[in-house]
Amino acid sequence: MRSLDDLLAEGVSGRRVFLRADLNVPLDKTTRAITDDGRIRASLPTVQALRDAGARVIVSAHLGRPKGAPDPQFSLAPVAARLGELLGTTVPLTADVAGDDARAKAEALGDGDVLLLENVRFEAAETSKDDAERGKLADRFAALADVYVDDAFGAVHRKHASVFDVAQRLPRYAGRLVARELEVLTRLTTDPLRPYVVVLGGSKVSDKLAVIEALLPKVDRLLVGGGMCFTFLAAQGHGVGRSLLEADQVDTCRRLLAEAGDRIVLPVDVVCAPEFSAEVETTVVPVDAIPDGQMGLDVGPRTVEAFGAELGNARTVFWNGPMGVFELAPFQAGTRGVAQAVAAVDGLSVVGGGDSAAAVRQLGLDEDAYGHISTGGGASLEYLEGRELPGLVVLADGSGQ
Ligand SMILES: Nc1ncnc2c1ncn2[C@@H]1O[C@H](COP(=O)(O)OP(=O)(O)OP(=O)(O)O)[C@@H](O)[C@H]1O
Ligand SMILES: O=C(O)[C@H](O)COP(=O)(O)O
Image 1: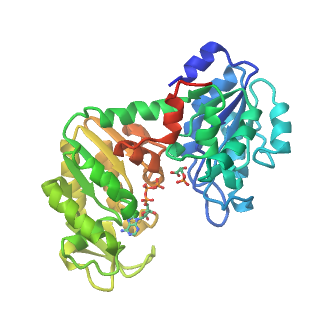
Image 2: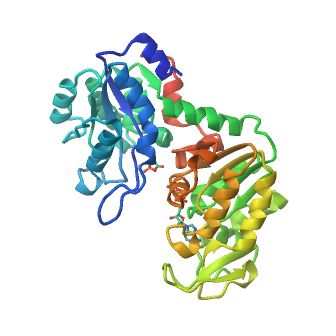
Image 3: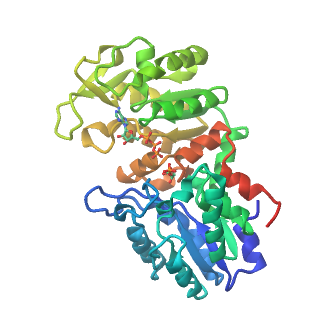
């Protein structure tokens, strides 16, 4: 895999660089203001290095999941403004993804200038399953530039035109963020210092079961909290009231618990409430006494203590997914407690996942206390699962361009 330093050594002054970045940031539902600009900031080292070297930088990115056509709510306009502020320059946004406006603005770039293409997912071909469809869009992307740099670590698991196909058409390089993410995640997959403890939370049980399956043979402890713990608690025979439950996954969870023995650690108590609300009255109950009409919306204090004790012994930790509905004050304590315990780990601590990284920042915790905060949600999990990630496969392929 060629690096950004290889490109800089070759000389990039005056060359047009198609830079795929992951600028998929959370927006406020009503104001559309960016609520966490972590991913934009994470992309700065590569953009800045290219500018300093005199490259003409054409940034491409996606935002959310629009349905393959222009949709103003998914415009990258707020991202262009924030990127410009952070770089101390103006970053124009193109009106189309790879059409006349993109071509004209790319043509007009001077050395060190930065341009942002409108949301690549406004083109249905970007995410198409059809290789030829994606290929046609990739041809248009490739015509804009001389070289391709991928710094969109959070999207390397997607076989999309701007991640995979365009890379086949140009000399390709990995950006600084991709390099840093791989360096750290490789330390988790290759001989991690032990005990190696993984903490999983969040809400997507079915998405994460494959990860649990793949990680179980490799970890010493797997601590499960967040919305996904209730399917495991149900598998142990507990009533979970109205908590998040994926009933069709209960059997799989039962099998995983049997295989894992004491390696899977579940909560012992939970914070319950009758509804998702910041004003609601909450109760802490043991996991075998969740009232019928209530939902478990955070792990309880005894669980934080138990998870903290496991994390206190650990030398390598990976944490993905909040322990509760951290967006609402009454359900923040579990995520805060685990985040603090992960920060205090004597060894390598890695936080992965958009929501977990946002939780660290929103709860006012010190980002520098962590070994690494990954920008990848699905991407970091699939990497740890050992899957082949299209965006990385194409970067590593030395054939052709
Ligand atoms: N007990 C719970 N009940 C319902 N929802 C919960 C519970 N605990 C956590 N959540 C929700 O889970 C969501 C995060 O889950 P998700 O699986 O998306 O995390 P992530 O992997 O960090 O994020 P991403 O996939 O975006 O990178 C949060 O919005 C949080 O409110
Ligand atoms: O948010 C993410 O994990 C990445 O930006 C990828 O987004 P996607 O899951 O919509 O492909």
